[in-house]
Image (tube, rainbow over all chains, first blue to last red; front, side, top):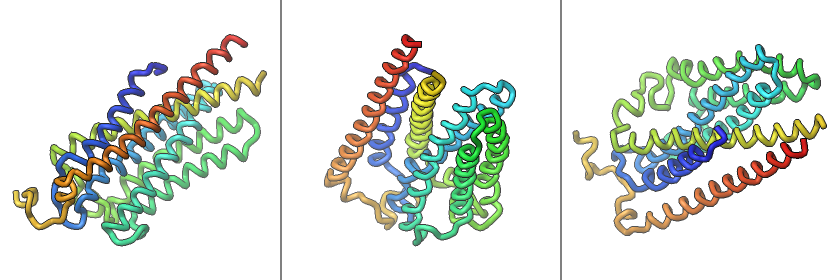
Length: 220
Length: 58
């Protein structure tokens, strides 16, 4: 993955999203008005976060069997990159909520659970910092990560559906795609998700490569 | 479907777009994105250089 083409693809997609996302037509809906365009920017943050956390759990599982330090570094750096996107998702969601639901934080189940799942990953990083011994740290944090990942999935995708939530697709609310994610919006929304996932992955690889060099210098 | 009709009384930034002023915002956002992405590319390039140097010294 040390090629350039996918970095360019990600950049082009993200720039396309900014242009098409602001200029192309969207459904005219009450309350949402033009803020429906936030779908192109707020939701891809979460997709990028989930992909990065999936990469992390993959390498955590792998590091348990290989005991390789590189896999452990990959797991932690993808969490580091994923948390940035999660925080951006929370902030953009709060701003969107202020102007459509009335409050920055209306203690909506999905908002709360999203915040909790970010905290789960903060706990992962704190847990790592608390253990000095490298082998032990890799093992314990990998196991923690394997528990944290399904918790995050449940918090974001299962529990909000069971409660009354303001988010589309939750608590009996129809999802965005059922009525207003029409074909015009799909043309922007899917490229936006792919673009931000690629950018997120890129940030992760940069963090990983820096960490590898730092590690090498420490060992020398 | 009535929901998707153009003039159903839902307030949208139609006049902003017809004035052409929205393009100013789009240009600004694109400049910021291009700038940040170019910066990301330059970081990537510098990192590649450091990685190469590290490989030689090893």
